Image (cartoon, rainbow, N blue to C red; front, side, top):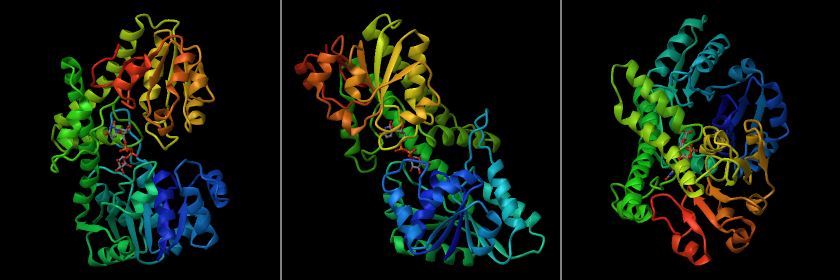
Length: 433
Ligand code: UGA
């Protein structure tokens, strides 16, 4: 199939490359000409394991192309995916300017039947707006369909999520759109749910919100665990053995971050309000998430007493492991809050340093965890990268001024830490002194 992907950001690049890998001819479009120039040489602007190799392979097989020319991409394609960003406005509402612009440009350049599929995360009823917009600008009245096929990729494992999805959701209004999309997704051998467009749009927001609610729920439970000296990991394990609950997304920590959950929860609250429903449950999910960061800062304060002029070594900047993404990462808020109190910050992250340099000021970026620990008053774990789990803690202890670790991701075992002589503070578990 000839496909265009409009918007070569995270979702667009992964989706386009994987569709090419499945044997389609794909043009990834972006209005950032410099980005397209880089992509043509298979230089990938984001870190996603396996993506660069797959891009190289599909450029070579002449199935994957990059272009800044939306007009010609639209004319050459029967199926057009919209994968532009939908950032948050100040009030939390999703900014759909990019979607509207693309819908208008597609309409202006149609030369026959087109299936336009929204893949960006959008509020319910965006599909109807896209349809109206195309109708208004499609002066030659070419036939077209609009569909919704939300993406469920996780950063860091996006290719495997695309190739082996739990489910594919297709929201359509016509038999033709349904057949085209079923055919396109056929090689993936996954459960496919065919529904109407509005339900498909809601599935995406509801899924991300539900996962975020799971995280806030276990974080709330972690606070109770601390009060009574129970172990949140065991509580989560016990809950997760019930198949109706399942153990995934029950890791307590410093709250969720990233480019999706915070933005999508805001947008879901906002669209609910617009439609006349107060989604108060989600407001509380958000409150608990924000409070979890504050609680973590308090743990650091309780351990150090005076934060001013203390040197704090931060391990991890990315919002989760296996990505260089720092968008809405807890690390940034935590570092700024500590700096506000006069702390000196040293940080190390295996991947996200370049992105962090653009937003963090007066921070010492270190070459590894040991370099960060050297001469610091404490070590603070913010992202659960595998390499942090395998640190030589005896060496770390010698390098730190005091044997104090405050772990926001529960990557070490309290008993082991006690044996090693650390004062160890973690989430939802008894403090080890
Ligand atoms: C999320 C969803 O998991 C994807 O299904 C969805 O497609 C994507 O958003 C999107 O809408 O594009 P992602 O943001 O890449 O994916 O990351 P997750 O793995 O879901 O993690 C999100 C945040 O939750 C991270 O900060 C992570 O540290 C935190 N988290 C996750 C926890 O604190 N505890 C957990 O048990 C799981």
